[in-house]
Length: 139
Image 1 (tube, rainbow, N blue to C red):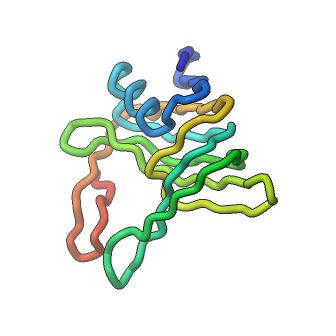
Image 2: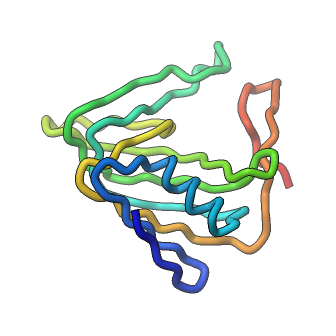
Image 3: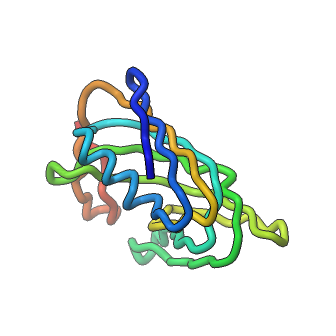
């Protein structure tokens, strides 16, 4: 992984074997980011996504392997208990043209990925809301 800082934007290049969530959180911690949004493209060969089950108030997990193009990874960085917190969704297309996606738990880069972090001045904290079962943004 390498990254460059350009005004309020951090451009992150991930390489084969890098993990998306782990890498983004590492940059956020190192650079002291408390609020940002992100977008990216690239390729993965092992990734886990989830779809939130409203009745269970928990995620159904799905894991995919094999070459997939990242159509889009989008999300935001906030903090939870003072540490960087990433909430991202990903959509990918496999070799057979099937499109899959959901809440991104982790993805291992197969070729490269390009993530753009747009830093927002300020901060937002996540707190668990037991009425819906998720970590909601608070101001």
